[in-house]
Amino acid sequence: MAKIIGEKIPNIPWQDKPAGYKYPVWRYSGNPIITRDNLFMANSIFNSAVVPFGDGFAGVFRVDFRSRDQKLVTGFSKDAVNWELEEKTIFEGYDPRLCLIDGKYYLSWVNLTPQGTTIGIAYTTDFKEWTQLEDACYPVARNGVLFPRKINDEYMLLIRPCDRGHTPYGDIFISRSKDLTYWGKHRFVMSPVKNWEMTKVGAGPTPIETDEGWLMFYHGVITSCNGFTYSMGAAILDIEKPWIVKHRADSFLLAPHENYECVGDVPNVVFPCAALADSESGKIAVYYGAADTSVALAFTTVDETIEFIKKNDLLK
Ligand code: BMA
Image (cartoon, rainbow, N blue to C red; front, side, top):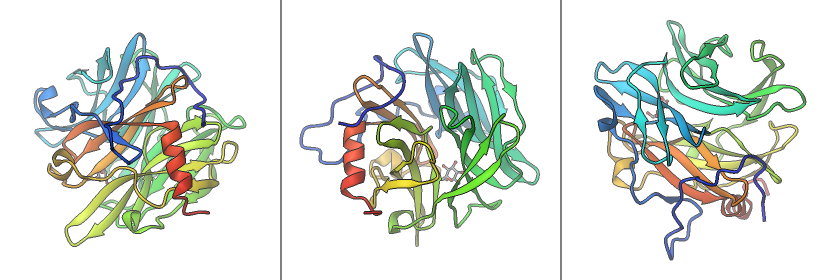
């Protein structure tokens, strides 16, 4: 039995796996949980981040407005399924990730600059006031994902250097910092290997600490004659040296299949940006953007996912 090392989330959203379903990740039956109708003037609400907050949950949501400006707004929920979103923009940009480190909620996101995208970092304690830090790198990069604690006194950031367009390549790296301002000691983590992720890979939710290593869900992209297809994979990284990949599933865990994943502004996209993980029960709820149009929810357990990764380990 694998163990999640982290907080208890007794009110984690949950549905049992449907009888007879054979795969390790299953979808919430009420998907999508957030649509463009959740906010006035939204064109689409998708790749978004959530964390436990107070006696409920808070989140930062990617909203592309009807102007097609890409903005981040906050939202709150009692049950992590039904969300109230605020109209006020907190930052420009997209693909937010959230994690709690030493009592502060840190946001990393794709920040927009005239020279291309970079990784914005900000923190809050109340989801009202935000303090923005220096960008974590110069352009061009996306998919900046912080680890939820320092490792050997250093903050760790997964990062995916890219180009200014719809990048046709992409590897995951780690950068390290003592103060969240100066980043360095960069290490390569992984490249695409299997066909389902052959074009590029990028980190997804905040990595989940387990007694087997850091559980990292990530997205992988295949290019077909119809364009990009984004799916979710998983790997286990070394606890002390998370640039070392210990195990990695050779097949995706979730890929576009349902209508809301296959049809939308960008068809065939499953883009995970957040996960809630309950250390007591081992339950994990993954939040993902569906077809760049809505937010959807899927479930797994730490045991099912780690067993799947090890059984289908491309590193063995
Ligand atoms: C990536 C990011 C994501 C988006 C995906 C599919 O490059 O921009 O925000 O979900 O493309 O369009």
